[in-house]
Amino acid sequence: MGLADELLSDARFLADKGVAEQRQTLMRRSISTAYYAAFHLFIEDFVEHWEFPDQRARLGRMFEHRKMCTGFTARDKNKPTPVELALHDVITAFAQLQKDRQRADYDSGWRLVETDVRNSTGLAEEVFEKWRGIKDEDAARSHLLSMFGARPD
Amino acid sequence: MTRQSEIDGAVARVQQSIGPDVVRIRYEIGEDWSGQWAIFFRIVLTDDAARIRLRDVATRVVRGLAQQLDYPGLGVFPYHNFRSVSEQAVLQEPAWA
Image (cartoon, rainbow over all chains, first blue to last red; front, top):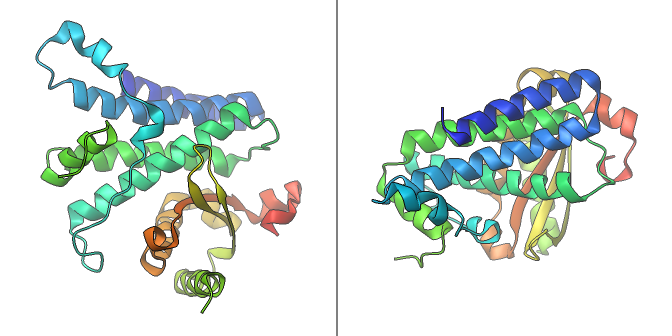
């Protein structure tokens, strides 16, 4: 099991425990971990194609969270392809996870409820499932490059 | 038509199309954590919808709003947060009322 999958498993564990014990700190850690699970999913996918395994961790540290939420528009907005629709869902979910992670880590006034936590783990699961279904498609590979700073074609 | 009425109309249409799982949708426009303009939707769901079919309903809401609203044209990025009627009854936050 890779780091991304382990983090997703941890996010679920923290969600269940946090909700059961009504502990805000665990719920916050769950939301934060759900985001990092998705973050590492993309990192792993990006760096696995780097030829030199000993440099992959270093390459992974290059990526900036702030730049990873780049927008996406289908070629025909009124008729998105199934791949474009899935990619849109992945991007929207990832941006939401990133925003909620920021809030979970820094907004001490946020009173979390079970729906916040379940939604985050659900979003992360959705990112995993949908990304793995489309990651070899041209649109997905092109967007992955954009997430890591490449200019659009 | 103002942008606010455009958004209000879209929200009403999405709420109507999804049905009783969605109790109400509120929103505000502001800057997100990175300084980018954003629209923050706050969606109150029935307790059953939040507990049993959260991701299904949430996906329909997110997609419905995206189909109705031209976010790039509005210059905002969308965020969506959900809670149940019971959770809001406990928290009593005016922004969600």
